[in-house]
Length: 235
Image (cartoon, rainbow, N blue to C red; front, side, top):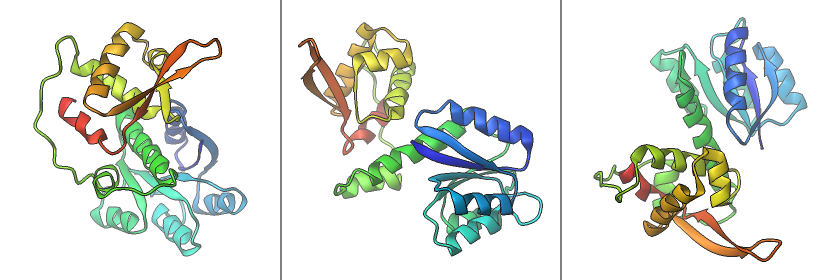
């Protein structure tokens, strides 16, 4: 689980961030701070992976907090969530290592994208393996040129594929089954299998057969992280 600290002085926005965070798998809220000093004190006592940081706060602001965190060489990531839209503020936070920047007001989908992208990158960082230039460019720096759109096979729809793909990317586990995906999406296993077969054919997924406790074979799927960008032309 990724441990999160929300730094936000507005009670309504804090509750919104809490609610949004609770809807995304893999994250747990460890604390809330309403000011620079509360955040600094909290970080002295607990280890945090990610801060959701507001900029405008009473007293010292979020840019100053981010600066202090880096001055102390604390290993914590920051996603800024703020009404501050001034380019110099955005530039300062990015220079000090903010991994994303959401300008209020924002939609849940943008919040979800920021968090799931962060989780995906953390999974790559923690995989303890060498990484190819192709994967580094696409997964971390998003340098892949957008491919020309192509048509899906007959019987598959873009909206369902997007839902299934989003669910696959949200899983904490590196492997999953048809049943896992059906439970997560509420789509029938028969339909799920059609989409998984397609994803396997375009080499986005690898599949292995395993045996359950009663000896029945179970197909386990795993993302092919070197070629995941192939899916973009179908979405």
